Image 1 (cartoon, one colour):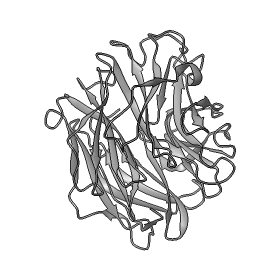
Image 2 (cartoon, rainbow, N blue to C red; image 1 turned 60 degrees about the vertical axis):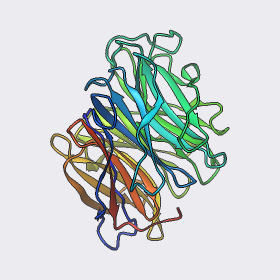
Image 3 (tube, rainbow, N blue to C red; image 1 turned 30 degrees about the vertical axis):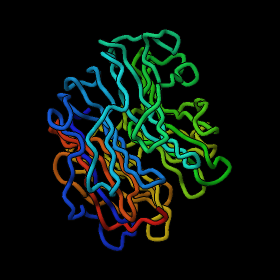
Image 4 (cartoon, rainbow, N blue to C red; image 1 turned 90 degrees about the vertical axis):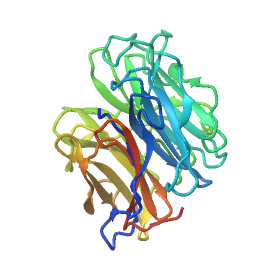
Length: 370
């Protein structure tokens, strides 16, 4: 996992002209040891609310390791990413570590839900934590909510008993975003993507979903896998209401892993390699949008060695093929999270300096509908 989160690209969606970074300067939303006291900042999550507020979340880390007493930081923008509020803490748990922020909004109520996982102080992802949800010292699955576009946050809700698999030593949402389905039989369903590992360090993907605006959650079936293992994951909705899943590999060929669901995430096709999407062993981000009058899925990840060269792809057939691939951010580029910002795509992403989370803009996509 990389050390730094840089924030944002805005991207026009109607690809009559190639996407490119906006001329608007990048904005440092989180800067370790500058506008936050933490030694390190990582793991971006970005959401545009129905009221037009951009919410950015990141892990503020006491030191540059994954489980380091991390706090969940929040910053907000009311002007489409041009300026940002001073970062504050959305949630912290003393010396325990909070990881893998993943945002989703229930559009009808306006409630924003922030999923994350906690590790007991000193606990690590591969340190032999208790398996399953029963032990209070295990890796826990929680969320907090906001009813004022991220200005304040609720007390945490622990959904480990409902969602965490009995054989899981750890689980991780996203990181990035969840989605709310807009079409078909399952319209209104909230979907949050997860990976989990058993005590032998075998990783799988699945989603948790809610049909009551986030009041209760249940776990869908594991994504079937053969000759591969799936890790950090994002999902997007296709034009027909089906789901597309894109995952980082844990084991298998150096390609992204993909699967599809026609029942709202309750079950999945067997995962396959996507020969068009190289995998430098890093998280990637997804965003569904209408671009140039056509439903599209955008995928963004690094393609260079050492996590570099943020490259944007566009699919018009639900992730089966990719109509366009454009190098958007040359140089260091690691984790990212995308949100539709007007006709563009906002991107919260990490360079590799372990000190800044940046927001940038990319033009040339002409997105519609928001």
